[in-house]
Length: 535
Ligand code: TNX
Image (tube, rainbow, N blue to C red):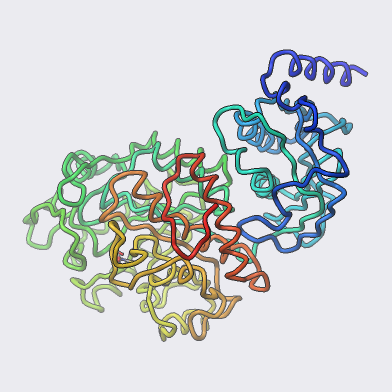
């Protein structure tokens, strides 16, 4: 009884105070079994769900009376409910109280743990839309979160507005059962070539989360700049990340440990794990020019902000190199709760193969020593690292002997083929930003490849997942980032989440068109590819 009374109080408050109530109460706007067509179909979602069974008689209408009820006793489920309420309140103007009651209430959206389709696993969910309630069930809070992101896309695009919209809010009826194809669905942001502020990274995280991306790899160090505070080598950031250390001498900056920790927890609240990268032994000019003693000859090279690659190397035969690397790995591991630490290893053209082997033989064990699983660009496959190390494929061909051998030895591989998944490649010759060394990458190129058989000898079972790297030699601000990431990021996200059986360019381009108005309402810049009939 008490529960019912407090609900009544809430609803009255909504009816009296909130502008959305008046809009919803307008005559002729009542949702009903007849007449009112939802604008969205149950399958209008990116990434495409595993299974969707529409029921046109079961459309649900969000109203000022809707309550979000989360699993009793689960603080995590409640956080997901609160985030859902926060995303739906601005456009609806509804109160959308979040409660954790045991008993169902009328007109609820409930987020519940357990009792779902057994296929959903750790990250999947089951979404049931019926006349009077929406129920999301999952085994974990991550699954509930994924379900809420689907629900968000099933509402009309205006749900993304930041001010109250005078309209009705209908969700198409039916059931979705959905779970990921690969455990790792990632994006990468390069903070080294141009620094991007914590607020910019957070804005990107907010977008990634909507497409069920669950890892954000931060490329934190490179020839131009060093972007993460390391207490034992303090000049790395004050000098190596100082003013003028962006490409062409533009910008500079770095993350303090506090800012990094804040980013980690912000990402966590959207079920995204941060993967830090310290690139070595190449791509290290910022460290070498900051600390002269790290160089073989003890002489610091000048800082560089051009975009050449492959000229720098840590000094492989100097013991101080390993003191330095261990200090950095120890501190980065300590500030990173996620399981992975990326040690780069790409384009070490200034390091001989023998030295590269020596270096990795010393450094890989350090990553394990501090409790992390190493990631490296695919070049690390050539040193036969322990099989739990993850090579990240960035090549442009469908054959790579070292990678196939690594898969045969039992490695999981992360797929980021540069001619498909690199978000910094130009869309076509007229794209004002980006590079083109791996070719132009239109949205259909980004979409049309199968991570499960892209490289000979690297089958579905050897693939950990996919990642879309965004290198920022040419990207200075958030608009630049967004213009290159959208619409290609959702293509890579779908390849990581949706089963290959749903893969369909015609369907994808239609679903993508529906994202356009959402990006506009959120102020997200994007490339209006001529291959898509934008809404
Ligand atoms: C290659 S991909 C690089 C980066 C560049 C990128 C630009 C890789 C592992 N290394 O250093 O930023 O191309 O597209």
